[in-house]
Image (cartoon, rainbow, N blue to C red; front, side, top):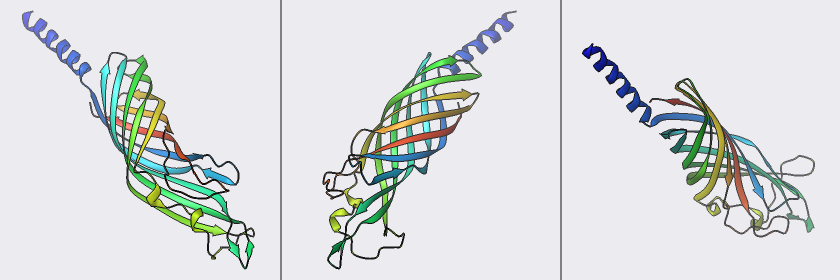
Length: 226
């Protein structure tokens, strides 16, 4: 009897300790990025697919939890707007397309609440800040005329974005919901940019102070080791 009680007590103690341990895992996902700007006319930013992957630690505090993460993020965004080069003494309207790709290391720190909290299934909501550090950036241009042909003339320099003028540090705020099933975890998140991505001087549609903020939808699937 004593051995049976000791065994039962040991099992309960180990189970209790395991329940207090943080969850450690990895996650991968797809993103769609779209820029908001202070230029409303003749300007468009389409959602572009990107990807991300990284690790997380979830510290459980009853139904509440705190979850810091380290994520590599590859964001891709397309901008379309008009430029006005002068050709043979006449001003022409030319459509510009800028394809921007930025790789970043992101550090979100999320606070969450488990609406459903069981060993089999969790339903969660969460929110928190994120700081993003750019590691590589690229920018490419294409120009087309009204009839869809490539434009190979000179475009005003003050209407070109420079990749060197994009900030290396960007702040976001995240909010979303997630589901855990056994060791699998699935999240849907929205990231809203808090500060401008661009700090250079350009002249687009007569606006010289261009404000660009990135807004991102994130869909991730994760695996909890603990």
